[in-house]
Length: 383
Image (cartoon, rainbow, N blue to C red):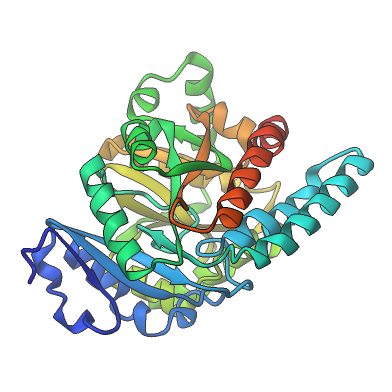
């Protein structure tokens, strides 16, 4: 069975999955095998069914949803395009424009539920804020599409976290296979070339970041972390990404962090001051690309300690030492651009050609609004 060109594994036949047959199977087994049983125990605001698509020797995790409008945006288009967008309106001025956009989002939100916006299979979904993707050919994308349409004929199909810098060839393949590129957010990426050839100003910024690691700090590498740090890691992440930014971000639990740490699924780094962990990052690596789904620090120590910049130094060093492309996700645009980050729109590659006309029209209209209003606004505000 494992030699088939394409195969789907869900709750009915998951017991037949030979993880070790696939080139990335051991990693996915460690990451997902327990997560599948109870997603909410690992990420509080994620309720989803996890399935896998086997294409040749590649195994691709997918999430399947129908509604679950309370979910984090990692598996909910409604949360991504409606709920999260409403929160981002706080950065918009003047007030009349903000109110107008809120009215527009309220109307789109009502229509979105009628159009079953959350009835979707997200392909290559690790339920992280940024999904790093295995390279796929046009033929592989076609096989994935055909297989999922056979099993989920009423669902939208989507690939999150697509951008021109990382996936230029794949973007063309998606369009060839009938996927639409739906604007998602504005992100910042440091390529290997840019990291290795900083400008004079960027080199100066890096040195200043390095100086943010003061004599009273102790840098903690991955092997230095232990189970006693798990609660503090969750606390620091939640302090920044949930309490300060948005409760719509994935709410990782201690069980999730323990899993990532125990099985070396993320690369953890941090800083301790007086024996207390005060800053931490967890780095996810796929196909020579890295990103930080875990990032947090003690906000109360600013400005005495520049912990954000200290973490930035540690992660730039990690990327340089390993030859990784550094995907820095969204936000803090000026800071990231001053440190070899190149801004670029991010997309969701969405397939809806098999759906009724009303749903296709809804997605076409939403894409138009995002192109004409959403992305220009995000670029201007550098969100």
